[in-house]
Image: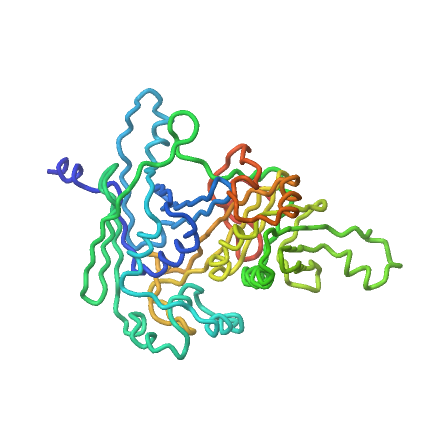
Length: 418
Protein backbone atom coordinates (compact mmCIF):
# COMPACT_ATOMS: atom_id res chain seq x y z
CA UNK A 1 0.00 0.00 0.00
CA UNK A 2 2.70 2.39 0.93
CA UNK A 3 4.64 1.59 -2.22
CA UNK A 4 1.67 2.32 -4.48
CA UNK A 5 1.00 5.58 -2.68
CA UNK A 6 4.63 6.56 -3.11
CA UNK A 7 4.62 5.73 -6.83
CA UNK A 8 1.57 7.91 -7.51
CA UNK A 9 2.71 10.83 -5.36
CA UNK A 10 3.89 13.85 -7.39
CA UNK A 11 7.54 14.82 -7.37
CA UNK A 12 6.58 18.28 -6.15
CA UNK A 13 3.53 19.87 -4.58
CA UNK A 14 3.07 23.15 -2.74
CA UNK A 15 0.23 25.29 -1.44
CA UNK A 16 0.27 29.08 -1.16
CA UNK A 17 -2.43 31.25 0.36
CA UNK A 18 -1.58 34.18 -1.95
CA UNK A 19 -1.33 33.75 -5.71
CA UNK A 20 -0.98 37.52 -5.94
CA UNK A 21 2.42 37.44 -4.25
CA UNK A 22 3.69 34.78 -6.65
CA UNK A 23 2.35 36.80 -9.59
CA UNK A 24 4.03 40.04 -8.51
CA UNK A 25 7.38 38.38 -7.90
CA UNK A 26 7.43 36.46 -11.18
CA UNK A 27 6.19 39.44 -13.17
CA UNK A 28 9.48 41.18 -12.35
CA UNK A 29 11.30 38.84 -14.77
CA UNK A 30 8.62 38.86 -17.46
CA UNK A 31 10.87 40.01 -20.30
CA UNK A 32 11.30 36.64 -22.04
CA UNK A 33 8.79 34.18 -23.53
CA UNK A 34 10.09 31.24 -21.49
CA UNK A 35 11.50 30.79 -18.02
CA UNK A 36 13.65 28.00 -16.72
CA UNK A 37 12.37 26.43 -13.49
CA UNK A 38 14.44 24.57 -10.94
CA UNK A 39 12.70 22.77 -8.08
CA UNK A 40 14.83 22.04 -5.03
CA UNK A 41 14.26 21.27 -1.38
CA UNK A 42 14.83 24.94 -0.56
CA UNK A 43 12.34 26.44 -3.03
CA UNK A 44 11.56 27.31 -6.65
CA UNK A 45 14.05 29.13 -8.85
CA UNK A 46 12.72 30.92 -11.94
CA UNK A 47 15.20 32.39 -14.42
CA UNK A 48 14.71 34.21 -17.72
CA UNK A 49 17.33 35.56 -20.10
CA UNK A 50 17.64 37.67 -23.22
CA UNK A 51 20.33 36.97 -25.81
CA UNK A 52 22.76 35.82 -23.11
CA UNK A 53 23.43 39.43 -22.06
CA UNK A 54 20.67 39.84 -19.47
CA UNK A 55 19.26 37.40 -16.96
CA UNK A 56 16.58 37.72 -14.30
CA UNK A 57 16.25 35.37 -11.35
CA UNK A 58 13.38 35.07 -8.87
CA UNK A 59 13.77 32.65 -5.98
CA UNK A 60 10.60 31.59 -4.17
CA UNK A 61 11.69 30.20 -0.83
CA UNK A 62 9.74 27.28 0.58
CA UNK A 63 8.73 29.51 3.50
CA UNK A 64 6.42 31.37 1.11
CA UNK A 65 4.22 28.28 0.96
CA UNK A 66 2.01 26.89 3.70
CA UNK A 67 2.79 23.37 2.42
CA UNK A 68 5.89 22.33 0.48
CA UNK A 69 6.60 18.71 -0.47
CA UNK A 70 9.49 17.66 -2.68
CA UNK A 71 10.48 14.11 -3.61
CA UNK A 72 13.50 14.02 -5.93
CA UNK A 73 13.36 11.49 -8.78
CA UNK A 74 15.64 8.45 -8.52
CA UNK A 75 19.08 8.94 -10.00
CA UNK A 76 19.90 7.16 -13.25
CA UNK A 77 23.61 6.90 -12.35
CA UNK A 78 24.81 4.78 -9.45
CA UNK A 79 28.57 5.13 -9.76
CA UNK A 80 29.21 8.09 -7.46
CA UNK A 81 26.90 8.10 -4.50
CA UNK A 82 28.00 11.49 -3.18
CA UNK A 83 27.56 13.24 -6.54
CA UNK A 84 24.24 11.56 -7.26
CA UNK A 85 22.80 12.78 -4.00
CA UNK A 86 23.37 16.36 -5.15
CA UNK A 87 22.23 15.68 -8.73
CA UNK A 88 18.85 14.32 -7.71
CA UNK A 89 18.13 17.38 -5.60
CA UNK A 90 17.15 19.49 -8.65
CA UNK A 91 14.28 19.16 -11.15
CA UNK A 92 14.72 21.44 -14.17
CA UNK A 93 12.36 22.33 -17.01
CA UNK A 94 11.16 25.31 -19.03
CA UNK A 95 7.73 26.88 -19.02
CA UNK A 96 5.90 29.69 -20.81
CA UNK A 97 6.25 32.63 -18.44
CA UNK A 98 3.36 34.72 -19.90
CA UNK A 99 1.04 31.70 -19.61
CA UNK A 100 2.07 31.17 -15.99
CA UNK A 101 1.39 34.81 -15.14
CA UNK A 102 -2.00 34.73 -16.87
CA UNK A 103 -2.88 31.67 -14.81
CA UNK A 104 -1.88 33.24 -11.50
CA UNK A 105 -4.03 36.31 -12.15
CA UNK A 106 -7.02 34.43 -13.54
CA UNK A 107 -9.22 35.74 -10.70
CA UNK A 108 -8.22 39.32 -11.42
CA UNK A 109 -5.50 41.69 -10.35
CA UNK A 110 -5.65 45.40 -9.54
CA UNK A 111 -2.70 47.49 -10.67
CA UNK A 112 -1.04 49.78 -8.17
CA UNK A 113 -1.54 53.52 -8.46
CA UNK A 114 0.85 56.37 -7.93
CA UNK A 115 -1.07 57.45 -4.86
CA UNK A 116 -0.46 54.12 -3.15
CA UNK A 117 3.25 54.40 -3.87
CA UNK A 118 3.53 57.94 -2.49
CA UNK A 119 1.67 56.84 0.60
CA UNK A 120 4.18 54.03 1.01
CA UNK A 121 7.12 56.44 0.77
CA UNK A 122 5.62 58.73 3.41
CA UNK A 123 4.73 56.05 5.92
CA UNK A 124 7.37 55.00 8.44
CA UNK A 125 5.48 51.92 9.61
CA UNK A 126 4.18 50.59 6.34
CA UNK A 127 3.52 46.87 6.21
CA UNK A 128 4.36 44.89 3.13
CA UNK A 129 5.23 46.31 -0.26
CA UNK A 130 3.46 43.41 -1.92
CA UNK A 131 0.36 43.84 0.22
CA UNK A 132 -0.07 47.39 -1.01
CA UNK A 133 0.82 46.71 -4.61
CA UNK A 134 -1.88 44.04 -4.71
CA UNK A 135 -4.74 46.49 -4.18
CA UNK A 136 -5.87 49.66 -5.86
CA UNK A 137 -5.71 53.18 -4.53
CA UNK A 138 -8.08 54.67 -1.99
CA UNK A 139 -10.50 55.65 -4.77
CA UNK A 140 -10.50 52.24 -6.45
CA UNK A 141 -13.97 50.71 -6.53
CA UNK A 142 -12.59 47.19 -6.97
CA UNK A 143 -10.71 47.46 -3.66
CA UNK A 144 -14.01 47.15 -1.78
CA UNK A 145 -14.50 43.68 -3.26
CA UNK A 146 -10.93 42.53 -2.81
CA UNK A 147 -10.74 39.13 -1.12
CA UNK A 148 -8.46 40.53 1.57
CA UNK A 149 -11.10 43.14 2.41
CA UNK A 150 -13.84 40.52 2.50
CA UNK A 151 -11.64 38.09 4.49
CA UNK A 152 -12.10 35.37 1.86
CA UNK A 153 -9.23 32.89 1.84
CA UNK A 154 -7.76 31.88 -1.52
CA UNK A 155 -5.42 29.00 -2.23
CA UNK A 156 -2.94 28.30 -5.00
CA UNK A 157 -1.86 24.67 -5.38
CA UNK A 158 1.14 23.84 -7.57
CA UNK A 159 2.18 20.29 -8.45
CA UNK A 160 4.56 18.52 -10.82
CA UNK A 161 3.86 14.81 -11.18
CA UNK A 162 6.85 13.45 -13.09
CA UNK A 163 9.53 14.51 -15.60
CA UNK A 164 7.84 15.66 -18.81
CA UNK A 165 4.42 16.09 -17.23
CA UNK A 166 2.64 19.47 -17.20
CA UNK A 167 2.87 21.87 -14.29
CA UNK A 168 -0.56 21.81 -12.64
CA UNK A 169 -1.89 24.93 -10.92
CA UNK A 170 -5.17 24.82 -9.00
CA UNK A 171 -6.64 28.13 -7.85
CA UNK A 172 -9.40 28.19 -5.26
CA UNK A 173 -11.14 31.39 -4.33
CA UNK A 174 -14.63 32.12 -2.92
CA UNK A 175 -15.81 28.59 -3.69
CA UNK A 176 -14.59 28.70 -7.31
CA UNK A 177 -11.89 26.24 -8.39
CA UNK A 178 -9.85 26.57 -11.58
CA UNK A 179 -7.35 23.96 -12.76
CA UNK A 180 -4.67 24.81 -15.34
CA UNK A 181 -2.12 22.43 -16.85
CA UNK A 182 0.87 24.28 -18.29
CA UNK A 183 3.05 22.48 -20.82
CA UNK A 184 6.67 22.03 -19.72
CA UNK A 185 9.65 21.97 -22.07
CA UNK A 186 13.07 20.40 -21.91
CA UNK A 187 15.63 22.75 -20.31
CA UNK A 188 18.27 24.37 -22.45
CA UNK A 189 21.57 22.52 -22.29
CA UNK A 190 24.98 24.14 -22.27
CA UNK A 191 28.36 22.50 -22.39
CA UNK A 192 28.99 18.86 -21.69
CA UNK A 193 26.54 16.45 -20.16
CA UNK A 194 23.46 18.51 -21.05
CA UNK A 195 23.53 20.37 -17.75
CA UNK A 196 21.19 23.29 -17.18
CA UNK A 197 22.52 26.65 -18.31
CA UNK A 198 24.31 28.68 -15.66
CA UNK A 199 23.53 32.27 -14.79
CA UNK A 200 25.66 35.13 -16.09
CA UNK A 201 28.65 34.74 -13.78
CA UNK A 202 29.52 37.40 -11.22
CA UNK A 203 32.98 37.15 -9.71
CA UNK A 204 32.16 37.76 -6.03
CA UNK A 205 35.80 37.40 -5.04
CA UNK A 206 36.81 40.39 -7.17
CA UNK A 207 34.07 42.98 -6.77
CA UNK A 208 34.90 46.45 -8.05
CA UNK A 209 31.75 48.06 -6.61
CA UNK A 210 29.24 47.15 -3.95
CA UNK A 211 26.45 49.60 -3.10
CA UNK A 212 23.21 49.16 -1.12
CA UNK A 213 20.49 51.80 -1.37
CA UNK A 214 16.72 52.20 -1.34
CA UNK A 215 15.23 50.66 -4.45
CA UNK A 216 12.71 53.48 -4.96
CA UNK A 217 15.53 55.98 -5.48
CA UNK A 218 17.07 53.85 -8.21
CA UNK A 219 13.62 53.49 -9.80
CA UNK A 220 13.12 57.26 -9.78
CA UNK A 221 16.55 57.82 -11.32
CA UNK A 222 15.93 55.37 -14.18
CA UNK A 223 12.50 56.92 -14.79
CA UNK A 224 14.01 60.42 -15.03
CA UNK A 225 16.78 59.28 -17.36
CA UNK A 226 14.31 57.52 -19.68
CA UNK A 227 12.78 60.88 -20.66
CA UNK A 228 15.63 61.40 -23.14
CA UNK A 229 14.99 58.03 -24.84
CA UNK A 230 18.61 56.97 -24.25
CA UNK A 231 20.45 54.11 -25.91
CA UNK A 232 23.05 53.60 -23.22
CA UNK A 233 23.39 53.87 -19.45
CA UNK A 234 26.79 54.52 -17.91
CA UNK A 235 27.23 53.61 -14.25
CA UNK A 236 30.18 55.25 -12.54
CA UNK A 237 31.38 54.94 -8.97
CA UNK A 238 34.29 56.74 -7.41
CA UNK A 239 35.85 56.76 -3.94
CA UNK A 240 37.00 59.92 -2.19
CA UNK A 241 40.30 61.24 -3.50
CA UNK A 242 40.79 63.66 -0.62
CA UNK A 243 43.23 62.72 2.12
CA UNK A 244 42.00 62.72 5.69
CA UNK A 245 44.54 65.43 6.60
CA UNK A 246 43.55 67.87 3.84
CA UNK A 247 41.82 70.94 5.26
CA UNK A 248 42.46 73.62 2.63
CA UNK A 249 39.94 72.44 0.03
CA UNK A 250 36.82 74.51 -0.42
CA UNK A 251 33.38 73.14 0.45
CA UNK A 252 32.42 73.01 -3.23
CA UNK A 253 35.48 70.99 -4.11
CA UNK A 254 34.90 68.71 -1.16
CA UNK A 255 31.39 67.90 -2.32
CA UNK A 256 32.65 67.06 -5.80
CA UNK A 257 35.27 64.73 -4.34
CA UNK A 258 32.91 62.80 -2.07
CA UNK A 259 32.39 59.11 -2.84
CA UNK A 260 29.47 58.94 -5.23
CA UNK A 261 27.43 56.80 -7.59
CA UNK A 262 26.56 58.38 -10.94
CA UNK A 263 24.07 57.23 -13.58
CA UNK A 264 24.51 58.89 -16.99
CA UNK A 265 22.44 58.36 -20.12
CA UNK A 266 22.69 59.62 -23.67
CA UNK A 267 20.35 59.38 -26.61
CA UNK A 268 18.94 61.27 -29.60
CA UNK A 269 17.17 63.81 -27.35
CA UNK A 270 20.20 64.64 -25.26
CA UNK A 271 21.96 63.41 -22.13
CA UNK A 272 21.24 63.41 -18.41
CA UNK A 273 23.03 62.52 -15.19
CA UNK A 274 21.84 61.51 -11.72
CA UNK A 275 24.36 61.43 -8.88
CA UNK A 276 24.09 59.84 -5.41
CA UNK A 277 26.74 61.12 -2.97
CA UNK A 278 27.92 59.00 -0.07
CA UNK A 279 28.75 60.75 3.18
CA UNK A 280 28.14 60.44 6.90
CA UNK A 281 25.54 63.23 6.74
CA UNK A 282 23.64 61.60 3.86
CA UNK A 283 21.63 58.38 4.02
CA UNK A 284 21.26 57.94 0.26
CA UNK A 285 23.71 55.06 0.13
CA UNK A 286 23.60 52.63 3.07
CA UNK A 287 26.70 50.76 1.91
CA UNK A 288 29.38 52.09 -0.43
CA UNK A 289 32.40 49.96 -1.30
CA UNK A 290 34.51 51.17 -4.21
CA UNK A 291 38.31 50.93 -3.81
CA UNK A 292 38.98 52.70 -7.12
CA UNK A 293 36.99 54.53 -9.83
CA UNK A 294 34.76 52.26 -11.92
CA UNK A 295 32.90 53.07 -15.13
CA UNK A 296 30.84 50.65 -17.25
CA UNK A 297 28.21 51.12 -19.94
CA UNK A 298 25.09 49.01 -20.50
CA UNK A 299 22.19 49.00 -22.89
CA UNK A 300 19.50 51.20 -21.34
CA UNK A 301 16.56 49.10 -22.55
CA UNK A 302 17.91 46.09 -20.64
CA UNK A 303 18.30 48.02 -17.39
CA UNK A 304 14.81 49.47 -17.83
CA UNK A 305 13.38 45.94 -17.99
CA UNK A 306 14.12 45.68 -14.25
CA UNK A 307 11.97 48.70 -13.29
CA UNK A 308 9.11 46.54 -12.04
CA UNK A 309 11.44 44.97 -9.52
CA UNK A 310 12.73 48.44 -8.60
CA UNK A 311 9.19 49.65 -7.87
CA UNK A 312 8.32 46.55 -5.85
CA UNK A 313 11.45 46.16 -3.74
CA UNK A 314 12.55 47.90 -0.56
CA UNK A 315 16.32 47.79 -1.07
CA UNK A 316 18.69 47.06 -3.92
CA UNK A 317 22.25 45.77 -3.85
CA UNK A 318 24.27 47.01 -6.82
CA UNK A 319 27.41 45.00 -7.43
CA UNK A 320 29.87 45.05 -10.30
CA UNK A 321 32.90 42.82 -10.72
CA UNK A 322 36.21 43.75 -12.33
CA UNK A 323 35.04 42.62 -15.77
CA UNK A 324 31.96 44.84 -15.71
CA UNK A 325 29.23 42.25 -15.02
CA UNK A 326 26.47 44.11 -13.16
CA UNK A 327 24.21 42.52 -10.55
CA UNK A 328 21.07 44.26 -9.29
CA UNK A 329 19.62 42.27 -6.41
CA UNK A 330 16.29 43.48 -5.06
CA UNK A 331 14.96 42.73 -1.59
CA UNK A 332 11.14 42.49 -1.45
CA UNK A 333 9.49 42.48 1.96
CA UNK A 334 6.63 40.09 2.59
CA UNK A 335 3.90 40.13 5.21
CA UNK A 336 2.90 37.13 7.29
CA UNK A 337 -0.29 35.24 6.66
CA UNK A 338 -3.15 36.85 8.53
CA UNK A 339 -1.22 40.04 9.25
CA UNK A 340 -2.96 43.30 8.54
CA UNK A 341 -2.31 46.96 8.84
CA UNK A 342 -1.66 50.09 6.84
CA UNK A 343 -3.24 50.42 3.47
CA UNK A 344 -2.63 46.85 2.48
CA UNK A 345 -4.71 45.25 5.19
CA UNK A 346 -6.12 41.80 4.62
CA UNK A 347 -4.21 38.56 4.59
CA UNK A 348 -1.22 38.38 2.29
CA UNK A 349 0.77 35.23 3.01
CA UNK A 350 4.46 35.65 3.64
CA UNK A 351 5.19 32.19 4.95
CA UNK A 352 3.73 29.16 6.57
CA UNK A 353 5.41 29.89 9.87
CA UNK A 354 3.41 33.05 10.45
CA UNK A 355 6.43 35.41 10.46
CA UNK A 356 7.28 38.12 7.99
CA UNK A 357 10.14 37.56 5.60
CA UNK A 358 11.86 38.71 2.43
CA UNK A 359 12.20 37.48 -1.12
CA UNK A 360 14.89 38.30 -3.68
CA UNK A 361 14.89 39.11 -7.38
CA UNK A 362 18.29 39.25 -9.05
CA UNK A 363 19.28 40.69 -12.44
CA UNK A 364 22.61 40.25 -14.24
CA UNK A 365 23.83 42.42 -17.14
CA UNK A 366 26.83 42.10 -19.45
CA UNK A 367 28.50 45.46 -20.27
CA UNK A 368 28.90 46.96 -23.72
CA UNK A 369 32.27 46.57 -25.40
CA UNK A 370 33.97 50.03 -25.50
CA UNK A 371 34.70 49.91 -29.26
CA UNK A 372 31.15 48.90 -30.12
CA UNK A 373 29.90 51.51 -27.67
CA UNK A 374 31.61 54.23 -29.73
CA UNK A 375 30.29 52.78 -32.98
CA UNK A 376 26.77 52.89 -31.60
CA UNK A 377 27.18 56.62 -30.89
CA UNK A 378 28.19 57.25 -34.52
CA UNK A 379 25.50 55.12 -36.11
CA UNK A 380 22.70 55.96 -33.67
CA UNK A 381 21.30 52.50 -34.30
CA UNK A 382 19.68 50.77 -31.34
CA UNK A 383 17.44 48.37 -33.21
CA UNK A 384 19.92 45.60 -33.87
CA UNK A 385 20.50 42.37 -32.08
CA UNK A 386 21.32 43.17 -28.44
CA UNK A 387 23.77 40.32 -28.35
CA UNK A 388 25.88 42.09 -30.97
CA UNK A 389 26.49 45.01 -28.62
CA UNK A 390 27.85 43.00 -25.74
CA UNK A 391 30.87 41.09 -24.66
CA UNK A 392 30.07 37.36 -24.44
CA UNK A 393 29.76 36.08 -20.89
CA UNK A 394 32.75 33.78 -20.50
CA UNK A 395 33.58 34.10 -16.84
CA UNK A 396 33.74 31.37 -14.25
CA UNK A 397 30.17 30.57 -13.25
CA UNK A 398 28.80 31.05 -9.75
CA UNK A 399 25.21 30.62 -8.71
CA UNK A 400 22.95 30.88 -5.66
CA UNK A 401 21.55 34.32 -4.80
CA UNK A 402 22.94 36.37 -1.96
CA UNK A 403 20.93 37.86 0.87
CA UNK A 404 20.76 41.60 1.45
CA UNK A 405 20.35 42.21 5.16
CA UNK A 406 18.03 44.82 6.61
CA UNK A 407 20.95 46.69 8.12
CA UNK A 408 22.81 47.09 4.84
CA UNK A 409 25.04 44.03 5.23
CA UNK A 410 25.08 40.74 3.39
CA UNK A 411 23.65 38.14 5.77
CA UNK A 412 23.86 34.42 5.24
CA UNK A 413 26.19 34.83 2.26
CA UNK A 414 28.43 31.84 1.83
CA UNK A 415 30.55 33.51 -0.87
CA UNK A 416 31.67 36.60 1.00
CA UNK A 417 32.88 37.31 4.50
CA UNK A 418 33.00 40.70 6.12
